[in-house]
Image (tube, rainbow, N blue to C red; front, top):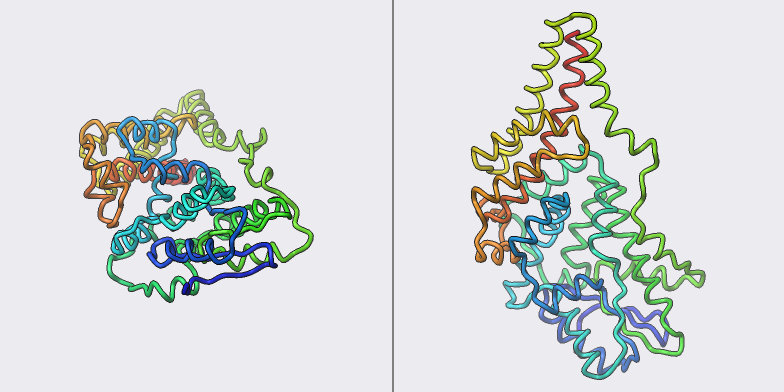
Length: 383
């Protein structure tokens, strides 16, 4: 009946690969529960994703403001970008992405089976991936995802289901942009999911429902008799040591030291020149990136004014101010927020007010960072 790919690890564990956008996957879940008769349903979901699907959660204005204040705009932006095509294709089939995972949960609960969520929290995954990426890689990532034209590529759902789901295809491309981020997004999750399945009681039959893109990786790990459960380690966000924490302050300290030295030496002309370079580089770069995000003229002005100051204080970010200004000037409506959650078009990042707030916040931050590092060698060359 079902063409969905399966791998039987042994007579106790069956892995069912699904395409998160294919309606056939929902039927496949029910079919294999009936055929395999498991005691436990293991699902590729974390608690937060499960709640979002179960509650049909929507972004609201308070949540958007919280995202800006907590500096989570890049994480939300990337998460939205990764899901964009998947969401669009899911809605083309009149089925929401993740429906087959919720079908597995609901079917298991209806049959009074044990349901286990075996994926790592999505925010932890994205934060670990983001930390692995340098400034150049972050810019390349945004350019790669935002630069794709709609309708460039057609996807065969049957072929995708037999091979790997679209989200995993997108994630696999991360390796060409950032090998470290690719490891976090793919390999670490494979290990995390496999570990979650392996610790289930050996006396119980397990049907694991996961994206087809994770099927081979998880199966390879489960077939290893010496699985080490590293989930606690993989849940940890690496804390910066004293040296790493001091690095963001090196540039501000260098700038302040230079200004103080020039003032002490009475080099007023050089002092004014250095100050002008710092102000211009930061202001122009932040304003340019804010404008590229489609920011309101006042948001662009806020970005230009904030960047020279926030670049001297790693505790602040120009994007927070520009994003907040954008939100207040072009406040998203309830319809904007609901439409953005669907994200069935990349154009929504510019045409949707909620998407534009996130884009303004993220790109202004990148522009501000670039401006600060451009200013430093220019100042040094001018002395």
